[in-house]
Image (cartoon, rainbow, N blue to C red):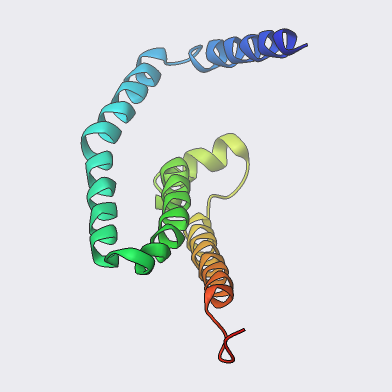
Length: 140
């Protein structure tokens, strides 16, 4: 059964690849290579340095526990920005509307709302977990 599902996923990927490369395959290949180079040479050092600053600012010991409550929503928000950047920036709104038949308006606002919800939810989880970890006033 697992082999069948794996085979079906390969067939689906092959179909998607053929459809993707059917049009302007040179630009698609250039985009993939460019995306890998930009990620590895520009983005990775930037967010590694930002994480290093965050960890050094947190100090040592129990005070460092809040770092992951910033890392996770920042990573998810960054991933959403990376995937939806053309629509968030508004650079392809006319082309998107022509192809999809939908308006590209509001993507930046939606991304900001999702980012705020991610950080707000992370802060709530941090507060709830931090409240349970503290000893009570009566020593019990």
